Length: 180
Image 1 (cartoon, rainbow, N blue to C red):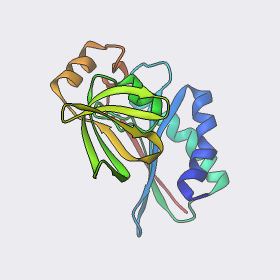
Image 2 (tube, rainbow, N blue to C red):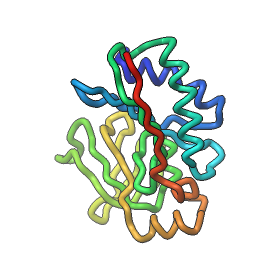
Image 3 (tube, rainbow, N blue to C red):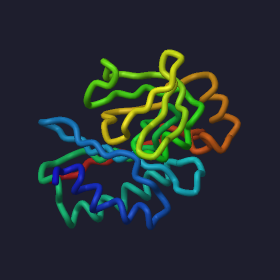
């Protein structure tokens, strides 16, 4: 189990109990490490700085005890923002109708990168309209995916529509230094 998986296993249940969904964890940097935790509210409400602070305090307590990163690091807790990453299969269903970029681990139909309108999910495949035709992308093969910032996505965020009501306050962040 790598450090990201270990951290997800450690903090995921606590975040769920607090009413949050873990969107993404990243550890970056070699000399000065940064642990990035991205989360959403399960109730669909907009994330606030207070939400990020609550997550930061809770995860810090867990990580201080378990110590999965032995070196000093900076902890960043943020909301996904409007042009959010799509990391779970239900994200592709929730944001159907919006534009997205998808990068695959392996080539499909001679390419690794796709962009276009999300058409939803069919079983374990993400459906995307790419170059005017639907394409099915195996979810397990997706390396990275994110929404593309478009006027339609901004309008949905501003109107508080169900499709993107949690992105209105996108980009909230809490940062703190943690010694090793």
